[in-house]
Amino acid sequence: MIDFFIEAYKNVPLWHIALEFIAFVFGILSVWFAKKENIWVYPTGLIATVISIYLFYTAGYLGDMMINAYFSIMSIYGWYLWSQGTIFEDNLPITRTNNNEKIIAFALFVVTILVVFGIYKFFDYPIHTDNYIDIFSSGIFFAGMWLMAKKKIENWTLWIIGDIIVVPLYAYRGLGMISLQYLIFTILAISAYLEWKKTLDKTVPQS
Image (cartoon, rainbow, N blue to C red):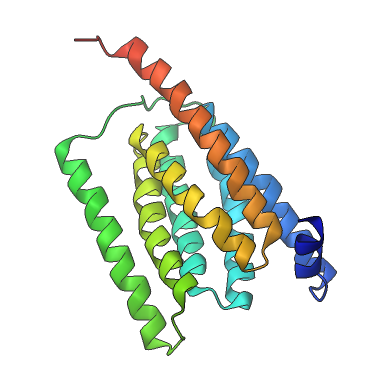
């Protein structure tokens, strides 16, 4: 297993490996801050996603590049929503999605799949099995990021599903650190869901 990951980086420039490591660290920090409802989820996430945009662009993975570009935009949007007039304090409560928000999230999922598929076709990129998985996970992550910005607990369900899907995908593509990162993301997302649920249960009377 170790040899598999090492071999993937055999011909990769050292500075690319360094960038991937920085994205790895700040990505994990971002999810940790999200779990703790800490607004630093967004600045740390921005560092990770901006680096990832470049790495995926150079690797030719358009779907992943688009996901991270969207993450960067939504990080700015989420930062604004969570701050509510102050940079460091969080005043947005955890809530569940209502019917309209579920419809919007599903629409984001479907539209994202169609747009990413269309971009692959427009640039005449060959679409292999791993690209279809990439396209599908893109839809999940787009919807999940929007729900996170709104601080909806269901965002963690989507992150867990998406993370589980892409762990083997990135390992197959030879992106060992990113695969490991998403494995850690999965564990953190499960923990975060349980922690957010405890907080939500304290604020919402049980019927």
